[in-house]
Amino acid sequence: MRKVILYIASSLDGYIARTSGEVDWLFTDDDYGYSKFFATIDTVLMGRLTYEQVLSFGDYPYTGTQGFVFSKTPQSDSSNLVEFINRDPAAFIGELKQQPGKSIWLVGDAGLIQSCFEQIDEFILSIHPIILGEGILLFLPPLSQADLKLQHCQTFDSGLVQLTYSR
Image (cartoon, rainbow, N blue to C red; front, side, top):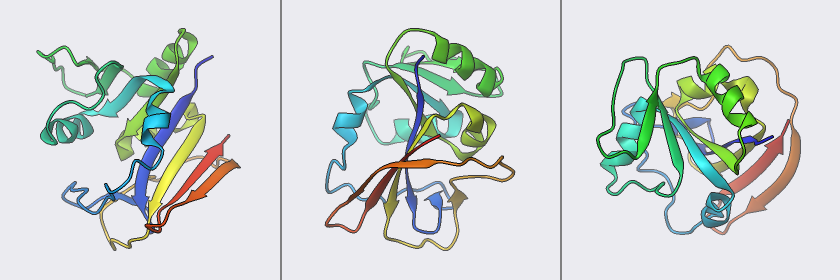
């Protein structure tokens, strides 16, 4: 069975973006293991707002993967980069995990993370040494308790700490 991995960055105080959605505070001076991680996945999942933000950065960064964007309103993607899904995320992801393939990357957003929290098998969190004070939380309440096991911890000269947990 395929696993779903939440691979995401957050501030030390648990925010994944500023209140405006901006992620200008993220470190981009190093790969931080991204290339190695990206080679292990073939599917990306994200919410509509995350997808729109990703497109605002320039070229679509996930070419070569199967992309699904969860949206409550019917949409289409004329570029054929992704497929829009208007279904219960947890049920859809449960079915996706049964299909053959590599791991599945849950890119974000906080609402999507909350709605399919039980389907996440591994958490790779890149904690940036910055306190934003406010913004969009990584984990929105309510969530059920999840007892996790630390698999790996890596520190970088920038002060970033990357933690890998499994259920």
